[in-house]
Image (cartoon, rainbow, N blue to C red; front, side, top):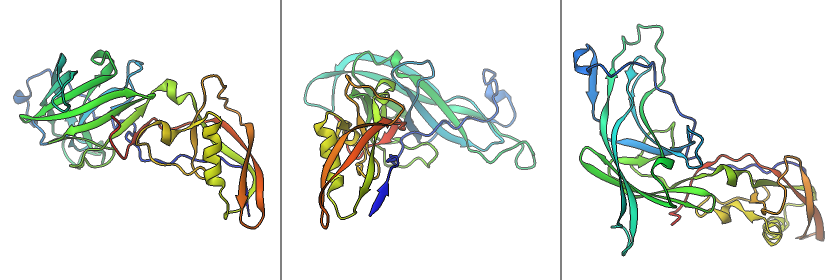
Amino acid sequence: MINIFRPLLVISVLCFIPDVSTARAYDFSVDCQAMRHCQSIMPAKAGLYLGESQTHNILPRLVLTVPAGSGCDQVSNLRTSRNLRAAQPNIFTKGGHVDILEIEIHGYQILRGPGSADSTCTDEITEAIENIELADYMSGSRLQLKIILNGKANFFDLGLSDGALFLNPLDSVNIFSFIPGENISDKPLYCGMMTNAFLGRLARVRVQGVYAQDSDLDKRLRNYMRDSGFIPLDEKLQGYPPMKPLEDFIVLVPLDQENSDHFRTIGQVKYHEIIAGDKLIDVGIERAVVYPYFVRNRRSF
């Protein structure tokens, strides 16, 4: 028998980790070629992910990043040019039009540091980063990205649906959506980021009582919450990592119900144990703190 009264934790692969800041700032408005140890570099590939808006917009920002050097080096921002083309033919669907944001990467500049002999150096990896606020370009629920690096075009879809912004790779050549903090893989990831309004409606499910492992409580708990109007998160967001109700169970609270920080009982679940037969157990919810960034197991739209 198991005696349980504990939160059911959400464990999922993240699509976002707080930004790794670049090393010491430097004014690269000065001609790099006129400075010793300064280089202009065009990267072979770059990473792409979604980050929280830096200007408090509802939509997140798009982050382009390139590992550029060590903690001894000073690196400029990743230099880009952008062009928004409205209502363009969508080459990835049969008919239809879509707004396309064209981004061309022009490289970055790096001022090499003195090396390991400098005691002020750190072991961190310096990144060249470009932040793009999507609210400046995305007026509807859909935006296509065309990102050009070294003359090669990469295509991604952005779609706002069901309380999250989804990032889908369409044709990735040398730009790859990835998990910050990890190496940039040659296999782009399908990612998503929940909006703040959506996050405020998420609750963690807890059961209070004793139950046996040889029961059908796991299945009955999911069905009970769904029938009571609480939508499981892995059913609401397409491609969200599957949850086990007795281990990690987050649900979307209906708009007409309060989502409190304090635990409240919402009812009892009837379930069956092989030895003890039919039993009842109390179930309740409390507001959940969930990472808004996640990797999906399939394309969402």
